[in-house]
Image 1 (cartoon, rainbow, N blue to C red):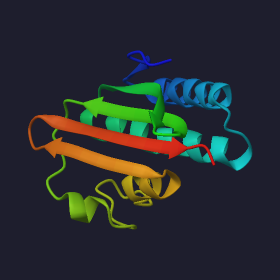
Image 2: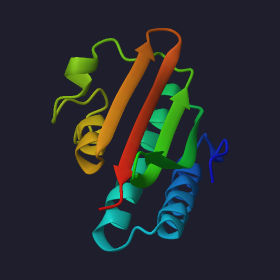
Image 3: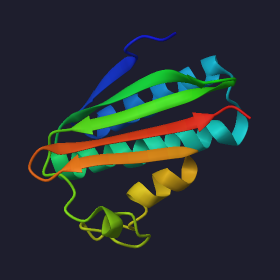
Length: 134
């Protein structure tokens, strides 16, 4: 299933739910079960919520992933929002720009096996996360 993935436009809370449901469905198809499904859905929610709250619009791309003998899911969240001025600060638990719990990005990183942020202030942010089957 190496294609350009399932794309979900993110503009509202309803889109967060849709991305989460499609991510969970793909994870089941790829062989994930139990708590891994919950972790993947939660990580998708966190990064999609950041798009709605900070960039207003963007997309989540869901794909299968493989690396050698490892197989899993790859989730990419892209936006053309304001970017993240201080990634190190944004990655600290408890740091929030909107009086939230501050678990968004660090929470998503903790839930997944691989996590990468590419951001440019004034250009946008791309978050790439992977979870591998055990």
